[in-house]
Amino acid sequence: MQSGFDFGDLQAVRAIEVAAGTWEQNYERPSLGLPDFQAMAVNARAKLNTVPASAREYFDAGVQRFEAALGSLKNAVEVKRSDLSTLEEFEFEPEGPLAEAFTSLSRRHSGAATPADGVKWKVREQIDASYYAVRVEGVGTVILRKYFHHDTVSITYEPPSPLGRRCTDRFFLDSYADAAQSIELPHKLWGVAFAADKIAYAGKGKASVPTFRYGGREYVVTSRLSSIKNGSAYAIGTAWALCPISQWPGKSYSYQEHSKLLEDGRQERSDYRGIVVLVRGQEMVIESAMFVYDLNAEPQTYVLDAGETSMDEDHDPMLLDGHHEQADSEEAFA
Image (cartoon, rainbow, N blue to C red; front, side, top):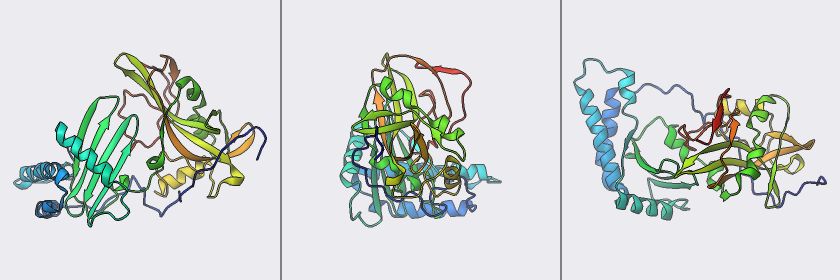
């Protein structure tokens, strides 16, 4: 091991590069006509009794909205593609007691070794947002979202799709974020290690990046978000542990090669694992993520770089692609 580095025990690294199209975001789906959606609704209504009791009310509410939207298009002279896109997702407000029962049930069943036939649960709880989801074959998917920075809770219902690869389908895939812990650390410690811009601008080369140390490991930061909540500034970021290239068990990439993986749907967007960087002249590989936050961050101003955003924008880890345009203006904590 190179002198001056302390990496601790390397975490197990799962396969990163998967089959082409697995994470694909921008593909053309075959066209569905109104009869296809009508058949989905009939099938979903018929199978509502297969939905777990604590989630059934949400599915029923979603199916009702689906049926109502279909009804409004039934007598339309012409149904456009844009009209059909309104049938793909329905959002509504959840009731308090029922929401708590749903989140508890989701925690209990998430990650079960042998999920119930046709029913799959998944939970992802982070400091900025948490997600509680259940997908029922033939009925659709319900996701309850809790957003820390907005103090809001919402429910989304998506009808079943024979085409796959929709937002919620990707949510049920194995993600780097599933195993990432949320750790409270001072922003002044990790904020200086932001390097998404340097990594992106390196192209075929290797970016020389700043790091911070925690728990015997060195980390680089690829996103940082900040805002004001209840009069106090707070900051949230994504930090990645680094390991020597000689100890990395998988394939390694330049940023340009990594970008091609994203375009091909072979790796999840915002997943930086496998990218080679330089730390004090030594080749290192981005290995595993953790989410860092500071609920009492000192107000400060910094320039938004490529890869970061402000909390004034919607921040949904399930959807965020992690690659933003560079901003020319300064963004404060306000």
